Length: 299
Image (cartoon, rainbow, N blue to C red; front, side, top):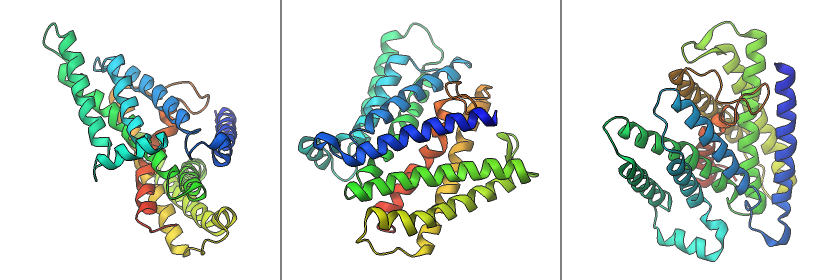
């Protein structure tokens, strides 16, 4: 299991590193994030497949066509600034709430319309609509914060914001995994995730905090030489907050799996499970990271 986990991790890290580098170089004048956005769409699409498959075990899966559409709609709303001046003008026209509420409103209408068109007898309608909205928010709105991080300020700062979030959250995952294997004795949430331990969580927080401080100390000056060195305590706070957000995201997906009686969301990645098993911590980490960056606390 560990061997396959390391192989899958090496494959994912190398592929993501290449795409991040390519997006940073921005061939043919593409805006920051344009190369990475199709990857977000692919991940969300596979995530919908896995989520619907789990929900289907209890007979409450939303219909496929509407679910994919509402997720793509919500994710596309976050990517409007990538569409150039027209996209940015539309975002400005939407006002302070932005396009996300419009996307969610359209999602509600679309899900209701699909159920009305298919209605034959009572049973399951409201559950399917509710689960369709879960998919729209969980796999449409939350991944949209990946786009927001990449679009932060400029090319270099956007890369730092996105890269730091991914690296710190995954350092927390790895630290918790290995610390749990070595020192784990006391269960953290035995009903949701029996293998997670308090000792592992402490290791995850320590790894993410150290990783955040190293990013602030070495990576930021390398990519933005003129940037002043940020206080160590701010980067440590960032790392700790992302660790807790990532653990919450992990447990949230475990909640869905336990409720549906599933061990893993899928089997696409040997040793890791499905795409949702990889993205779960990042989905909760991204909005937390966005608060740190857009508030001016970092950068």
